[in-house]
View 1 (cartoon, helix red, strand yellow):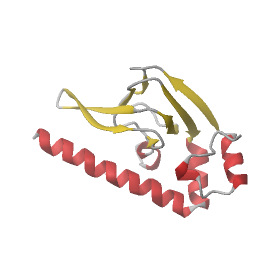
View 2 (cartoon, rainbow, N blue to C red):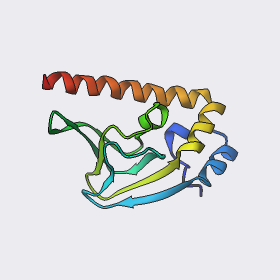
View 3 (cartoon, rainbow, N blue to C red):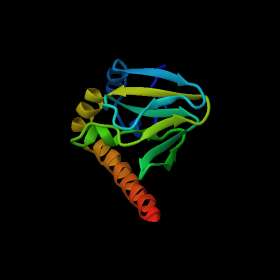
View 4 (spheres, rainbow, N blue to C red):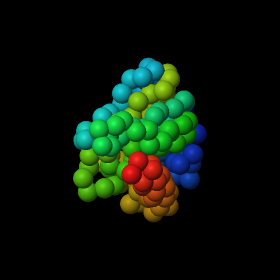
Length: 141
């Protein structure tokens, strides 16, 4: 069984492409409250949560603000891979024991060129999160 089988955002890829992509992926298990990455870290991968959830926090005006939660079957931190800065813009913390798939950045970028629908889905998620971030930041002012 391929570690990417059952990942909804990748369902429409051919079996061969999922198998090829899986060579550039690994599974990771994180414990409750473990930090996956911190704000301003370099972005080198995208994550797909298979089980449980993460909290995304950002420092705004010296406060730690929760921007959103990412739950099972959602992608995590695609934004930094597709922006020019290539830096993480928030911190990701596991809310409980969590299982995920790590996809290396170059492989997801190459695949998104081959499958414009994949890139479109990722951009839709990015746009939703940008709007959510602005709403949170506006409520602080």
